[in-house]
Length: 154
Image (cartoon, rainbow, N blue to C red; front, side, top):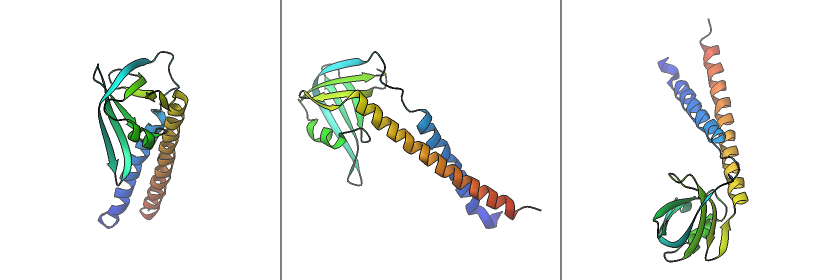
């Protein structure tokens, strides 16, 4: 067993990544709900997060209510949004889930940056990537499990 510790490590990590990938797929959002919430105001603060010089997400707050939103990089026009979202710019936001807002539509200075259809399509692509990750890791897990069982068969 000590000799093949890496197999156990690969199987455990494959199972974990597989579960995560399938969770990403099954937790993908439904199409735009009938009722969305809207907030109109000016941008109070903007934080752009980058990893390895690539855009990760944009967090911005809309005044006067102080509502915080996150614009993830997998949504369409994220780079354009990072350039146009500045303090004091007029925005119109449509979202769901008031406790943890999920952005569905964003207009910055009257220009649409994301539409509900584009937001849904982007989220579906991300969920299919999760499904692919889950399937790939499940195959890897199965391969190492069969290899281990064959090696230790009586």
